[in-house]
Length: 359
Image 1 (cartoon, rainbow, N blue to C red):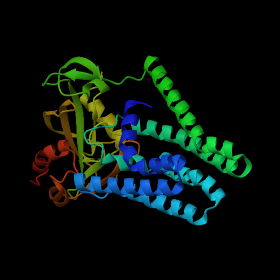
Image 2 (spheres, rainbow, N blue to C red; image 1 turned 90 degrees about the vertical axis):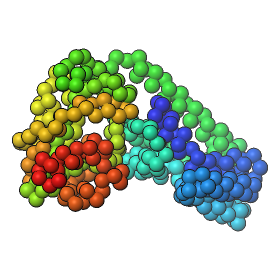
Image 3 (cartoon, rainbow, N blue to C red; image 1 turned 30 degrees about the horizontal axis):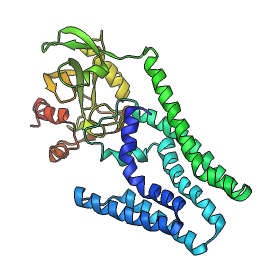
Image 4 (spheres, rainbow, N blue to C red; image 1 turned 135 degrees about the vertical axis):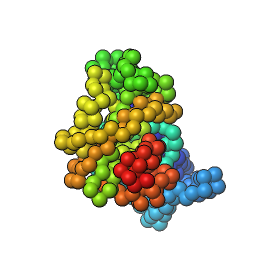
């Protein structure tokens, strides 16, 4: 498990604590005690989050209500088979969340954690790696759940007790050990896919090179990027919604096309390449608009911004972009300063509107 996955696990953990508390107290004392302690713990979490952050934590609430339902049924029926199947029922909830996040286009765990991530940014491709990890966890937990069901009906109580309790810790220990060993091997393996970008002075002259990762570790390494604004005959501007796996400003609406200039590329070559990669457009006639230095806490960019007329509906790359559409000028003006646009785009809006005579 790498650092980013570990950080996300830490963000998710508070929402799962009521279930863990229930399982622990249930095994040490009784279902009744586990239910009472877990509900008190869950209510305490809800109150703490509401007082500190002024919001209602739905994930904790749903976990607590699930425990009330399962624990209440178990106590009411006083049935040994139901008692034995209870860990499997809880595991099925985990499997459902893991499966939906791993195999669908909506990563529930990622969506849930976005509001807690603050300034933490997922590196490019990290979400895909996380989904791969969740697929492995899904199949492991599904197999483990089926084993609990089998042991409840066909194995001794002692065997069931080990499978429904200690075996889970063994499985997770082996899983994290395998993740750790795999991560160490990757660190030692030579990386043949390093992305190099040129370093430039404020006039755009190449003065060196650095990796993509290096230029995103803070300001100081000035590197060139391109922006392209597509405008149709109605005066509408095409914007893209950045994918959630982007290094910077995931989920924000941005310029029609944006990207780094690769080492050895000209500005024009990078513009055409990025336009083809992101919007599948190969015929375009860009007009230079503005060149400026843009610096944030993440990086230092020398931006080369262009505009072009384009009336068709672009077919965007779903690996790079979550959404894309034309916006009218008034709609853009109404949403300036609301946080839905990238700072880069908002910075270029006055120049763009002046260039197309709509300021």
